[in-house]
Picture 1 (cartoon, rainbow, N blue to C red):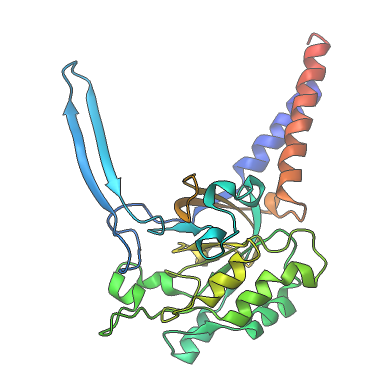
Picture 2: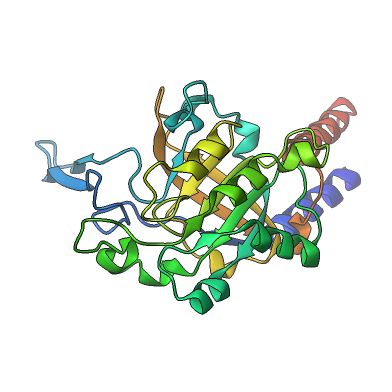
Length: 290
């Protein structure tokens, strides 16, 4: 019983000392969405007391799969890529994340459609080390500061074209093939960004989407609060709406930040081993009749 108590105490402390950071925007009429897509609409069906005197609220909404903070499934631009409901859970649940901050480069370049370059990624690795296997790579452009004004955020101009930074084709290919280059088993599992799209605003052929999705690397767009994450060490959980055959889906994304979560092992190994240890201890105590 004493061993079990010590284990439970350690478990509570490890979870209580982590900080949870919201990486998604509230899904409502203000959720950032490309002006070229169906915008979020919300209709009140019932708000009040029913005939039994019970308070009832019931609403309906309509929106694009790619509205607000959302995941792009590989099938979005890869015929044989995974749809949303086929992305393996282990690539979504408590995955290690790194943040590559290119906001200074974007300010210096003073170019709305700045393309993140291979050099930007290699410079990050030169300082922080090789991106580990099974990692979610988050690109911070600083564009989230514009999110309260959709026209500024999308960079929509007089020609009805969007203008905002994103991944260049070379950088996307570098990320998509990173695992193969370093002999990793899984490779980079996803790439997130704090803009409307992984590709730059004026992109037509969407080469970065194609490069990532051809390797079943998903994308997350319109991410919030990337400035609150450490360069490395965060653990991120991505929870998209499980749309059958979906090309994308709105997602709730939470980061865990704290030294207890700075692990290098695959997240499924960490979670399962902890759970198995807990079950084994409980069964041992019960078996002894304590």
